[in-house]
Length: 318
Image (tube, rainbow, N blue to C red; front, top):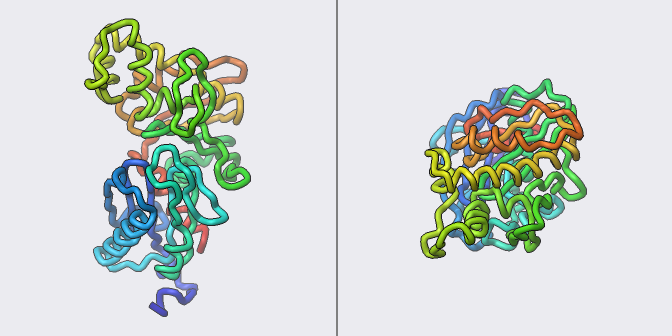
């Protein structure tokens, strides 16, 4: 253990870190080198874990297993996590999409592995991942925007990450996008983007939108994938819903552009990656033209941007 904790000028000894991506549904971990190559990778579900200690244990076990698998002892740990976070305590606090009220991460893992730990929200990590490994270094102002269980954004201006007072800047999922249906958000507010257009929100939005159009059985509520697949297959009802969803997404996207004036927006998350023409393309048709529309593209990092961004943060710690 002593050798692992001893600083060295040998770059070979500083070439690998552990990266962790904690989401509302899945936990991913990897051993990553300085070029962004993931040498080993593991994924577990965490949606049923309701105790922060259990999540700590799951993360530490995965890192130990990856270390044993590769024979590589990481020199730092980077953590990407669903927010909000409290960077002063190194914890996730009151996440609307996770069942644990508080999850302490940075200090317990630092004490356990005796190496530096850096953490940030998943979308900020995603922005770092795109900047360092996704070909986005030429962007003056980059917004990484993800549609997953929730909706979030990370913002980089000329390579500098916008963090906010305690690490929670650019919480795009909680932008106000509607006052007609006033759908409840997991954070306790109403009308927030996440309540309509996330993987968790789309089924609720479809139910509210369709109540006066079809006889709806709440017991047979469709999930987001089923709703979007039906629209993709040409069902008139679901196409009509996707048009309404595009208007909501256009409002959120317009707010992102007005707030951050990006020249590049990179979209990510399974909602966008699985239905690019239905989600990404349709929402751009509803962008307000107050500011010039930026370049908009879908991430090419196959969902690994937050994990790779966490690795970049870990290397920065060294």
